[in-house]
Length: 181
Image (cartoon, rainbow, N blue to C red):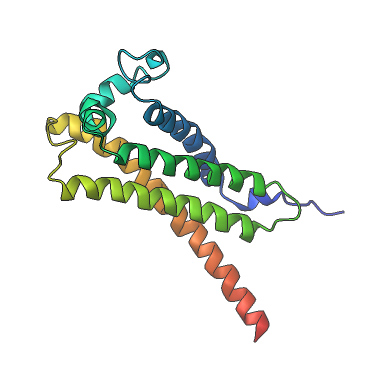
């Protein structure tokens, strides 16, 4: 009787931790975005999202300027956040299922991370191509510490996950291809 490795143990802990923790944060975020104006300062549900009162002043996508102008990007990206969260939670679930291989689960995890990375890159690119319409009013200090660093995390970590799981998937595909030859 050898020790049977749990499939989840084949995936680095930091990837599994990110999938869980980011799902919690992203759920809080899409809740704020989809429940505006109730979630905003002065709204009946704002007590759940007090830190967003500051962030709405840093990033106008989250504040009154986008809401008042009926800018649909915030709501659209929030719906994408719902899908991203479902994929992350599905990934964690699949890692525990006996009839699903690590490779199959990793394809879902890879897809979720690639979605996060792409969505965040789009978020940054919208700023670049709009002349920093939503964040250009900030001081450099606020921009760095309250926008670039926190949002940069959503590029760096998913990028590392895409690399790690992509490498794993390519290895599995190459091994499978060699079996067929």
